[in-house]
Image 1 (spheres, rainbow over the protein chains, first blue to last red):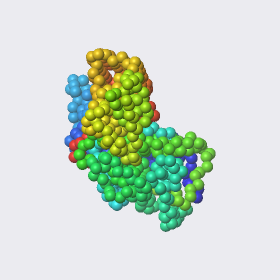
Image 2: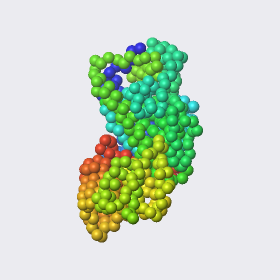
Image 3: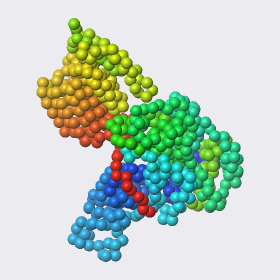
Image 4: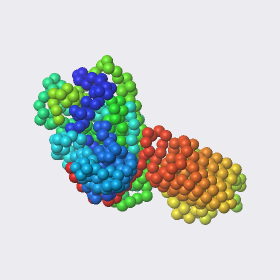
Length: 383
Length: 217
């Protein structure tokens, strides 16, 4: 069936801006891992929906603020992560956990704000929630509850799996030339690994497409009718995020470091969690280690793919733990670049008169998301 | 009886070490043991079981795999069997007399190492490398051929410097870091930081141990 997605959805900057307002702003968005925010004053910075964000630990409490000083809009934290008070380096303003200016050097000598003006000085704050070690924020004032975006079973699974993550985290960012939607479509396409990853991932995990006839029927019905019903749209949204054991691993090697971590599961399966809109968690080692892949939209044709690697929790520190994480990334790098190359080729070829995709039955998951997405973008439903 | 040297490791490094030992000690009897690794990267060392450690010395020649831990593990295993493991300082190097070189380290042809440097054990310094005075290269580091390292630099344990890297004076390269991107590095590189030309951003490892946070909306 022909996709409803026009090429503009992937290439138009105007479309991208509208998408930020209609889709991303109401949704809870992953921003990082709680393990990187474990100490007082530890922080991470991100750019979410064009807004610079700082997530900061204040004596164990995580808060999300716009990362701009209330004085002259200088970024408060300038590194991607670290441990530092929430202080502006420009004029020394220090902020407290409620976002108010706690200390303003030379306040009475040089600033001399009126009391009312002084009381209004503060940082824009955003809602923040965690599921286990996964940190989400919401940019909208009247946001959806988190459990409307994700169903309870998934929340329980994500809590369980992310609580198994170790505190030592490898992190990097790939700056890709592709629209973020190509990434979620690629991840929901179980047919491509046998071709694209025939010499890498597919050697060890024989991904099969799931021809779920009921789901195919529902996707076709939805494709024909769409929805204008808010509750139905929310129910569909909750169904877009799911996961668990995906396929058996052909051969799982036993490495020395396996003895040093508390394995998440005793199954030799490839675990996969797809969390709409732009988060992917997987374990290709049957629960010994995890990749957390976050597709952060930058523009219509740019996506920062932020990669985190962790092992399952260490039983005790061991000398080679950094080498284990490094080796994981070097292994995953091949597969990631295979995916990026195809997606960047698709992106480069798209133009305003390009044909719509024609999806097969096995792509019912992609079809359902695309139809729902178009209902949101065409204003038939609001989140 | 001529002295015997066991050279143990992976094929390319063993071949280089054999050629280098032959150049500096032509009468040395050399036995090269080229190890295979299984899928879990374990070595089969059974070939060594019949060899008397008192009758020969050994040298481990292995690459930078697993942030240099494989070479370290192999050296530790050989050492535990009682073998002496003198360093291999190739022909044509210029190593100052005040510089100390640890066991099982390799210094390639044409390398110049200035005075009062400390080269730890199990270090590999590639051919043509230039190292300034009072620099410390900690154990199990890997320096690719042609790298230029200034004076009073510290290259920490298990660090790797790749081709085309220049490290300026007084800089510290953190433990377990990899700098494999040609260019001049004039700032300290934190431990467990991996810098590759093929990556858009540095790869970092972060660890905060005090994980007692809770969220507030």
